[in-house]
Length: 413
Image (cartoon, rainbow, N blue to C red; front, side, top):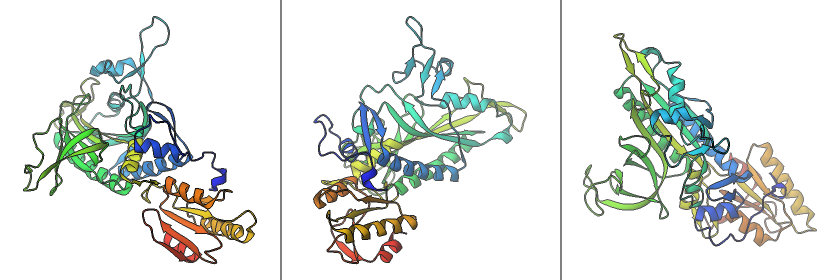
């Protein structure tokens, strides 16, 4: 894509009330637009990152048997009433007119919806297990919408739901999801810790969170430096600088950002919706279920928090909006550099390389600054000084080198 055709522009400054690094850099770089507290538009650059994250998630969910679907965002009152969650504080309710009681809410989670759907198709033990997932917008009446994409009122989420004959089979699948989540976050470039946690409004059982260590994190976790066993401070009996209960390692207190969570519900959501099956003995028993969430925007925001410098974002190659940022440093009358830049751009496109081509009539300093801010993994510069070569630099390194177009193609492929 030519940068001159990108309708967004980079910004030098934001309002003083925008404190979080992810909000500052994503807004300044033109990745997102803040509509109001906790509500953001994903701009073209940001949407490319979100799509990369979504594709990684899809691949890993498909590997463990997840079947993708899409459920409605508008929910009838009877769903949450059935499980006693209609009056949970975060629920956005729809009022259809003055003096009328709300009969609908907009989605904050889908356990109830999916349980009712499953009850129409599950009859026998032969129908189990199965798992479904969606990537959909969620809405939560968040009283503390802050920290950019880390705590929002509207956000994209992957929610996976699994259904099983018994607790043992649910535990088996729970472990599959645990590994799949590690695969997702590792592929996205995030180091996470599998952290024991409470269930909140979802379950009375212990659950697990995937936490990324960051000084801006709202959670406090205790993590073993040796075996990486971790617990959320809210439920933990571990203490800072003491020994781990799993090994002889030392426990450290860390601030962290929760980027994913997994829950075992047992029959909590099956019972209200009569989600039962007939087992081998001919007995009617309730289905066991679990749910597993990842916030796509939160992953994006967390990546910026843990991977940036004073000049801007440093995207991992797997989720970067483009593979390479091509900068043409042609003066207004420098036709040779301009033609060479166009040639390189077209060659990269033909080879299937994702390239953002800065063809704007902007001073070199401005192009370099924007390139650092946007954070594409590789920068390729063409100028009078580079001659028949291309100056290449990795975003997180200082060293540059001159290589040929063929060498650049081989490397990016």
